[in-house]
Image (cartoon, rainbow, N blue to C red):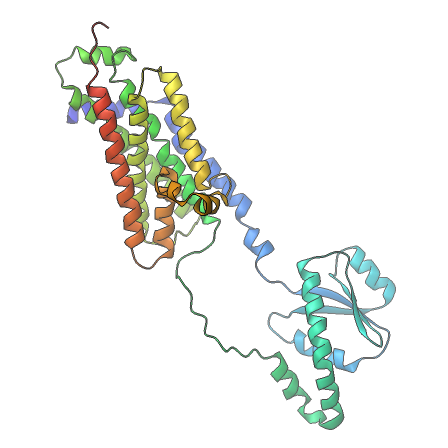
Length: 375
């Protein structure tokens, strides 16, 4: 057995497609994800001070007081520039400010287009108009209390305590990296397919020679599958290492368990290919096409190409994710990251193991029952 595994490993390590599809392609795709997604949070989620031009046609000391107080904050809401009408319109046209605040008898706002910044400015002015009367009355009745009144209005009163649902990384873009690892694991189906083809005398000349050898067919099959699982597990571990340590993607959970799920997912991928390779009498090229189509379709429905695909599947056909190999692998990473207990994580891994055993058993039954009158 060990002798057979040793030479099966040598054969697989020499495969021309191994370096590209199992190593270079995931590295390139992971780098593409990193480049594409690295600035999304900063651009669409994080807050930045909104620049605004102020044209003071009528003196408004209250507005001056409010903006002066705002500018003292560490991360101010607004950055105002007092200027005249012509300069303000120029700044707006050149997109150096998000809007123009007009201080006339009534305060008004002009923006170039609808945007998050424009909404913030509108919200600020609506709140300002509500609080202007309070400040005006304070100036008339008790000017000394103005600073404390403004401080009270600017302070936030929290009636609820924020309790996070999880301590993990909840960034939904992590799903792409989960599925990248799932894709690598399912590419192991090629190794399982090769193990099936190389042990069917009517499909492979190598298998025909094996059929005349004294070695038991069960030994040669197990050797081929074990070697395929070893090579695939190493490739999957390399991908996890690259994503975590090179791309600096925080999986949130315990890293050894991430490697464990990658190993189980690799076995699942090999078993899937082994089952496909054992069904029917189609040639190697046809079965290879079927194997790749099944693997990529599994990744597609898990969200590798479209991040919202998995939630759609959960809504329309939740049972499908329970048998979709890529979804099971990526869900294992998600459960490990988000949930504080390991019950869901263990459930996903047990499901993968059951599917692996089932598909491998189907492959063994179909492959070992074959007999050939002549080769």
